[in-house]
Image (tube, rainbow, N blue to C red):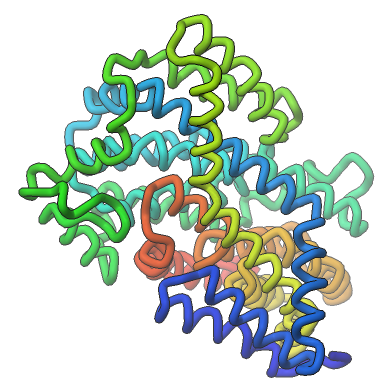
Length: 460
């Protein structure tokens, strides 16, 4: 396709409708990608799908993602099997006295693990879901708190993978001088309005200042009655509402060591954070180093034979396959949208409104639409920054404010999109159905996005 047209909007609409209707994100993304290939060249659908999928699988980012997610699943399986995660849950219950305090603990843990949104989403959800189950908090609410303290928090901290990636892009595109990428990034942090608002919103929801609304209210009412979330526990195991929390824990911990020690959970998690920082915010190297230390650490205690550890790790890797599959399908779908020139169409459609005062708000709106439609927060930023920043410089707009708008849009897309990597991993870590999580958190994300949009107009 040589010119961007409104046809490029069809595949994202197909995916969104099917995701809600079928509640099967991978199938929805594949159908959306096929729809895009039909629009590009009906006679080459098979060839284009084959070549694009191979290109995605050969992408270094996808390889990194598969290894990180899979090995994180392996580590989680070890934490569960040794009883360390169960011990953490028991100790956390000493401090969590009810639904609000358990969610507040989740919020604080999400703030503390600011290094990477993948690490955040998987660690916090997996750590806290048995605590919130005890107080009959819906998995949807847990996933919302986890997701809202993943990408938004990572965006606001200059020592995260987001800051490293986006700072590098600012240098590569001439927005910042060599070695000044993080410095320019830090200048934009006060203007990352959506990220600030998303974090504030989840805190207000946790404390009960903002009421539970829409689909989230239904999920909370269901959990309060002792009815499990979709695909959460086996209904046959739940005899009464009082047994809901116990059933949820037993379902995942029936093979765990009931005498597990807290240090067998805390040591690997602290090592993971420390190694990730040591290796310049590289989660993959951090995971490798953590496993290298954790396996002998468990072996010395004779918690289980090495062969059983390997079996547990393989099972843990398998548990991450749905999340990995969804992200791979999302990358294929993003490539189709790029081929259809969707980013260029959205920007060209909104460019007449891009005055110096309106530019930050329009940039936030257009990039948020793109990030939500394609599920690609980092990818959209990389594609559009060469288009947006020269435009901002030519009209004399405030550069840190425009960068803040771009990062706000990226964090919105990462949190709100049904099939973004952060959303998928937050749902996976929290043990929540993906579409249920996306639908229940969307009203809160949209409220924060609307306030952010008018905030950019007011500041400019």
